[in-house]
Image 1 (tube, rainbow, N blue to C red):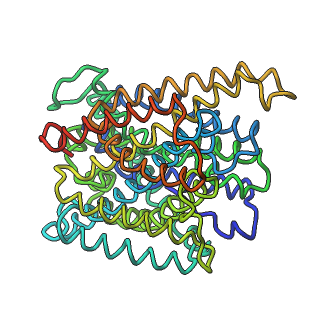
Image 2: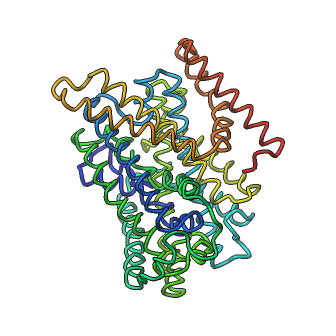
Image 3: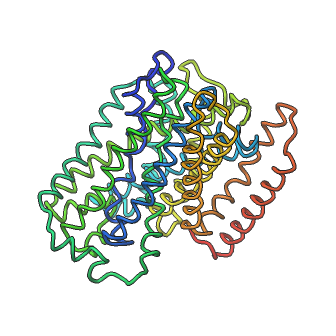
Length: 481
């Protein structure tokens, strides 16, 4: 998930730096779990269809981010700022809060992944990543990073360089090993589902892969989040597209190549991170060790960067009056300290909650994906509104029709993702949004501003009802995390 905006306060970021930020944002924990998650859901045929849908939808979203960066260069901090510009203050708040919450849940997922990776070598202590030992280690790690960041560690560019190399090298080694041991007959055997796997319709197979594809594409907005640090605004869009194309190629290779080296049932049964297990099936134990080391370095580096992104989102939202002023404060090292404190308190509470989850690993992954969908939907919606209005298109009116089509496809894709997620995750996200709205009330009172417009009252009422249904489901056991 992300390279930090190192030295951003001093130096403007070039196109290669912004592209590295997108690549760093997207190549995080998710890619190391693709083989097992896909093999559990489908064979190569379903996987190809899933990647075509996800790739098209996310490419369209990337093009929306590119168009908005070019047509509205006055809007900084991307994601939630576009929602506010298009749909008003409360939707802007929900987008900011949802993006921040998704980033927090992503950080929880990182710690669960670290626990499950260590569980491969110390199963009695760490288990699947949600044991007491795993939770204690996670909490120590969270607060060690917290105090390190407060001292201004975001300036340490070498950390990001080391992390980027550490996560790309194992991936390349794994892909080369899969290519070397490629067995066409095994691939053909797995192609339409494989032996010993439960029968499912193709639609169900594809649907079951959709949330992992959203998760691995999180970070596509990495350049947009830090757009105010770009040397040239046009580079933000270019970096988004370049990063997207490169990372998509990596993810498709990591998903499809294992099907040519082992039966689908064997791949689906490996422990997380599943890329380690899939490589172990091919080359032996050293493969699992290599990938596990890559995962640990990658995840710790990505955690550092996403802690900064979490704090940056709260900080930027507070600066634009969408969050309480408390979170706009910086310490002597120019770190948004209050935003960081709230972020890590919330992350710690979620980490503790994994103890009661049946499958903390996939639950946190799916929750992270769903919380990202609302901000993405609002960005696509704003892309439609902007292209229809013609604002920013005065010198390039011929691009309006094209950009509107891109935005419509991105919006339809995001709605499809909500449907694929199912009501459980949508209701659970609403449960978190309801108490989060307290921050919105707080911010509006500070400004002596009207709380809601009539349309926003309806949005809040729907959120409240959905949150109530979700809370009832949790309390009665109808919904289980």
